[in-house]
Structures are given as structure tokens and as C-alpha cells.
Length: 180
Image (tube, rainbow, N blue to C red; front, side, top):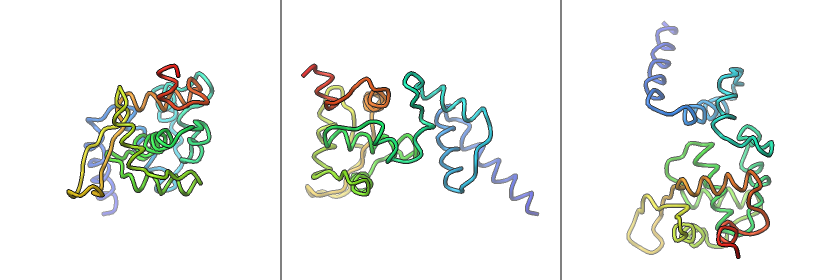
């Protein structure tokens, strides 16, 4: 009987992952392995993660980041909005979050000792940059204090990957891009 349930679960997982691209599948499989504390021995999963991440130039690959602290240390974001961007990258890429909660981002940063004084202002700054690095995807409530949900754009993901690769150092992402 247990085998029947096992195969049904595997079939359901397979159907859920079927329409996703390889990199997304890898992130989900890694997340599940971490969640259930199961090692991944498949070279295909490891190699696909490195190849699709495209971070081989400086020796940093997504595989080197076991937690937000490791990613934060590798990127060393200089300004509050960049700190929020890096944390958002972690939740979106490594924890497969489709909508980022500002409170969760700032709570994680506070745990690292790098809390942002006004997380909403930091994320709003990222939405105002050109190109936009973050977009607002949801707002619950009508007041100014209503909870908002965000998602990194392709430009936002690239900006963090530039930090990972050491292409942006010492200054904030926006200042480097504009040559300030």
C-alpha cells in the first residue's frame, strides 16, 4: 500500500514540475532536499545548477551559498536598498518565493545584523530605478501602511548576479550603473 502512495506522490510532483524550466526545477529540488534534510547525490542536479546559474567566473556559484548569510557576505551590499535586493534575491531564487514579503525580508536582514531602517522605502527605491529592479505585485489593505508584496525583475536578478561576480563593488548598484 505504501508503494502506491509513494508512486502517486511522485507522479503528482512530476506533473507539477513538468512545465517548469530546468533552473526552476533545480531550485525546487534543492529546496525540498534542504527542507527534508536529504542530500542530493545526482550529478545532473549539481551540474545543472552550476551551468544555469552562470556564476563560474569568480568561483562563486549558487551552490556556494547555503544560506542568506553566505550570499550577503559574498555580495557585501553597500546601501539599504541593495541589502533588500540581495535578501529578496535569496527568497526568490533559493526559496522559490513568487511574492516577497517586505517584513520577512527585513526580519531576515535583522537576524544578520543588517536590518533596514525603512524596508518599504528601500523597496520603493528599487521600484523607481530605471530599469526597475523590483516590482510591486500585490497590496493588501488601503492604508499607507498596507502590506505589499514584491518580485525582483530580470534586471534585479542580474544586478545581484553582478554583485556575486564582483562586477559591482564598493558602491551601491544604482551609483555604479550611473557612473557616480
